[in-house]
Amino acid sequence: MISFSFPTFIFETINFIITLYLIYRFIYRPLSSYITKRQESIQNELETARLEKEKASQLRAELEEKLQEAQKEAEAIINKAKEQAEVERAQILDRAQREIQALMTKTQNELLLERSHAIEKFKDEVTSIVVDVTSKLIMSELNNKDEVREKIFDNYLKEIETYR
Image (cartoon, rainbow, N blue to C red; front, top):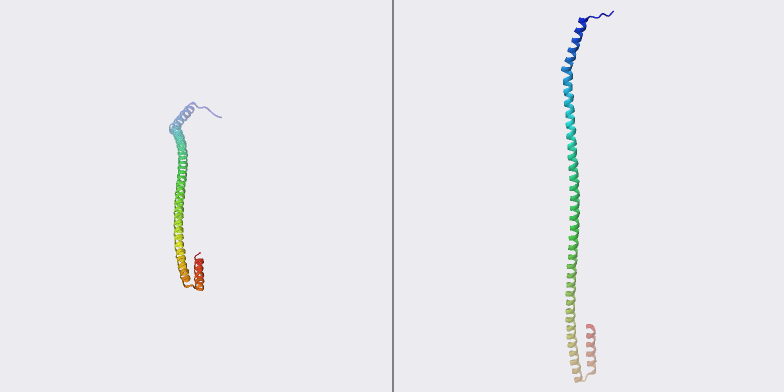
């Protein structure tokens, strides 16, 4: 049967308490300390991550705002360039129109001048021919040669017709 011995009981109780103390001292306290430090480290990392996330959110908002501003500026620059191009186009067209008008006026003046020169030349030639014909007719009348007169007259009429 089982017998109970008081000294053994005391010895076993003291042994149990010493074992508990050793476990507490060398296992539980370091383990508890490690777990507490680990919890604090995790809390710090979570807080750091939250702060970094907030900073990233703010930075993203700032970058999106700057991107929108840059897009607006780009649009404004493009619109300004289009307006300047339209103004330059209008100026170029206006200048070209003026140059065309000046060229047409100059050409018309040259044509009128050329025409008047041609008319003067034609008048001079007709006058010369008429004077020649008249002088030859007068000569032929003086000589009373009808045949010669007709031939000369016919020749000069042919010459006049060639100038037309």
